[in-house]
Length: 113
Image (cartoon, rainbow, N blue to C red; front, side, top):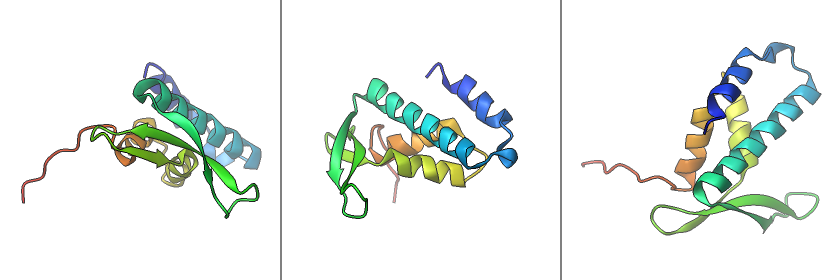
């Protein structure tokens, strides 16, 4: 959590309009590592291998965590990072919150009907 302000400041100042393909790949990998590390350290998530016939290897790595409701769910951190990179400006807190919500790691508010 203490890295959020520094990381947000860095991505906010980065000249994204000048980024080439290698720069975008490096940014993607940095955010993927940060997101995964956050989920593992803060929520006890773990890496798992999942079969995926759409990939050349036949599998992909996902993050698995037990939500506040006691159910275990899996999340592809690559998908979360790609979604964040497509919704500029990059918001680190939004990226982390999206992952937490998808894994149901936080209590969901009750909505009155």
